[in-house]
Image 1 (cartoon, rainbow, N blue to C red):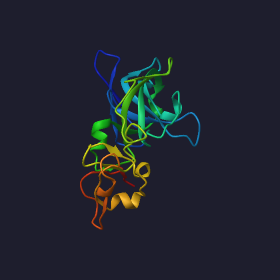
Image 2 (image 1 turned 90 degrees about the vertical axis):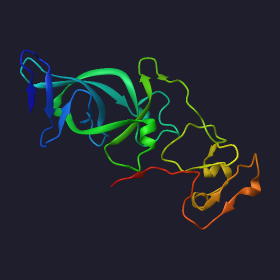
Image 3 (image 1 turned 45 degrees about the vertical axis):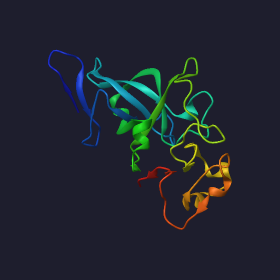
Length: 210
């Protein structure tokens, strides 16, 4: 159900069918995909308006998933990563299935728990040219990969760089038991396994809320 502002064709809000969730311009929404068994589309609502038949439409700016972009999904792309594109569309509001939150990358990494509605974006994407902004980000570890918040990393106490356990010949369980870690460039003998739970110097993978 939509509420129109007097004297204007734009609509203040739209209530998602079968729910009490209200969508307004600036919200991120999940939209029904064109094919079954596909993940919902994610869009940023720019405007809500009625058409000539008084049906409610939304202008959305699409988010792309890594597998939908040039180059596909790569090792450093998190499961909840999206790219904000310059691709706009007008869609029926009836295709909106739910609301979601697309966090900045920094805010996402600060979440203690990640829910089904939580996503993040650190790149803008131009589908026509296949280019990204920014075109480079900080890289870590021997593998020189950008940070994937789904992966555990450990920090060297000397150089302060972050490493994937596998890149320093450790298993995930061994990395979780480390009380201290110094990378091989400084002192291989400084690795000290410890039976205590995770201490400082660990970048935890995000826990998914059921």
